[in-house]
Image 1: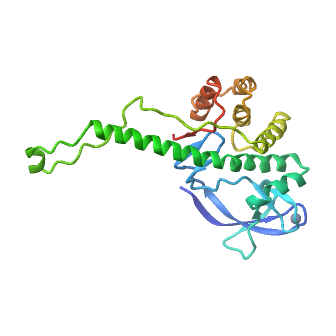
Image 2 (image 1 turned 30 degrees about the vertical axis):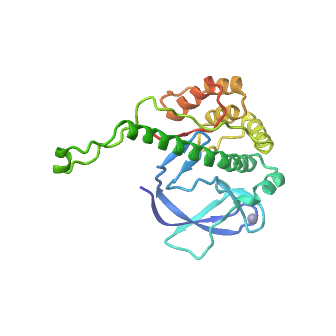
Image 3 (image 1 turned 45 degrees about the vertical axis):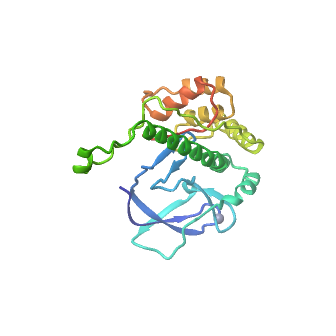
Length: 250
Ligand SMILES: [Zn+2]
């Protein structure tokens, strides 16, 4: 459960501007579905990264703000997120590596949205066709007994080994350029603040660029136990030489 109590009072390191942010006692990260690039569908927590813009115009990270106290409430504003349409401009203006990583990570996920849309439509159409075929093969029998007892129709059960396909993924030049630069920054080791495992993010980035050998090597750096669903799925997709972002539920 996500619980909020009061606010944290924060000061910006660049100009001293003051802000108030909700004080989270606990957070619920459950979502309807997850994607291999770290995006969450219908998430209870915001998907955005820690990238913010101070009132003085500087791009900063939430973690750059200095906590100066707590209160039950405050009239101070929250620190502004960077609107999606400002991201390309923001990325060009950035010079600090951690801020650039946050901006490019977010941009990577945003640029995957059109594919997500195609993927959802494709999956829905295929599942609808599977169900229609099942219903045609399992017609409801209107026997005298079923009419008399008003039996419920047989519930649909998705047949095992039903087709599971998805549209081809072809990254645009813009996507490739962003992914290549983000990979370079992560490989240089500037990713200690990543909420997600650094190597897993890197493996996924490399996979989406079709750099499967390097993706496999990045996964091999992960030493903890490998029961994590995302880890297994990304590993399988690397072996299949599949670059598409993939949706999964846990
Ligand atoms: Zn500032």
